[in-house]
Amino acid sequence: MTDVLIYHDSERSPELRHEVPHAIIDPFFYVERNGTRHVVIGSLDLPGVRAIGGFELHPTEEFGRDELVAKGLPVDGIRNEMALRICRGLGVESAVVPFWFPTQLADHLRANGIELRPDRAFFSERRRVKSGAELEGIRRAQKAANAGMGAARDLLRQATQNGSSLTLDGEPLTCERIKLAILQTFMEHDCTAESMIVAHGAQAAVGHDMGSGAIAPGETVVIDIWPRHTESGCYADMTRTFVVGEPPDEVVEWHRVTLQALERSLEAMRAGVRGKAVFDACCDVIEGAGYPTMRTKEQGKVLDEGFFHGLGHGVGLEVHEEPGMGLVDEHELVAGDVVTVEPGLYRQGYGGVRLEDLVIVSESGIENLTDFPYQLEP
Image 1 (tube, helix red, strand yellow):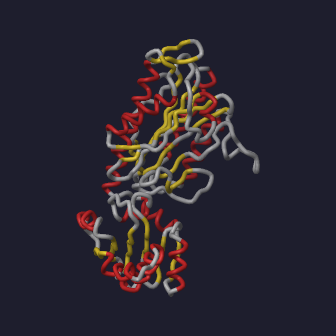
Image 2: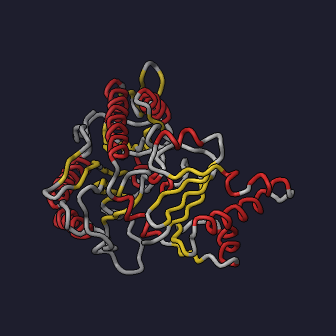
Image 3: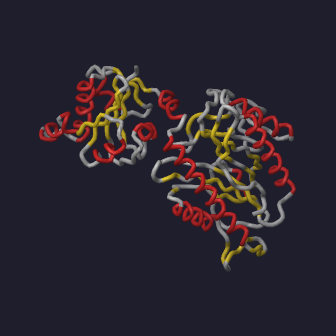
């Protein structure tokens, strides 16, 4: 049985948060030795971890932290020696660690005979099928996303066309105002967001341009939001595209093709299907309508129009995690995967359309967690 060593805080490490589902802002040690799960942590956070249950708990005093402090060692030296004492005390001679494991700490352990093997895939795979608490957190985050998108739609719906701009309550309707309404809605649903996309016009064709400024009638507004549920630390993700006023014919066609590609992709999804096969089903629709995709682009050339990104990604304790669905075929979908499906069409200097749903994969198909209409008109 593979031994495991993690040293981080569970706010920033999804690998650690998956094993210890409790928000702890200070770094601590997590060890799996012969299947037994150990947590070595300071007294401040001992009660919180004890309440979760399922761990062998060790206060840092058990491994002589007070003695190391009394010796006048620097903070890094205390951490390094603590890690070595923990490994020796628990009998760990070789362990798998996350790919980001601190280099200085790894050097110290290896110099003292502890073998460490960084393995990103090891931790990604164990996080793909979510725990019950994680699934509940994702569902709650998606409810917040649905509500946030509704708040954005309502502002667009209430806006008045005033020449070259949209106005609301006598002021220009801006991306910033929409973002504030979305964020306030997230907070009402016990969720947060450090960033989101509300991109209008030409901004909507520039990848992860977060969007800014006043919105004009007739231009596409791509809204891509990924709230994080505060208690579980889990994300959701969704995208819709709106046009206030008469949508241009080109945009109407983009939207029709994108929605058809989304529907075809959802139909293709179930456990055992490779992510690339779903991507291919999407590209078949888009290429059939005459638009370029990553499959048809010339090797070595940049594709910045048509469908120029992957179809989707896993969502959980990170907003982008395994599995991916794109040209690089690494995974079969498994029952319990939570993934996005997000086709789009774009033209640089003009705008774009993207639609994104969040689904849970099952043996027979998918459960779609996104409950929001697709139409362009708000």
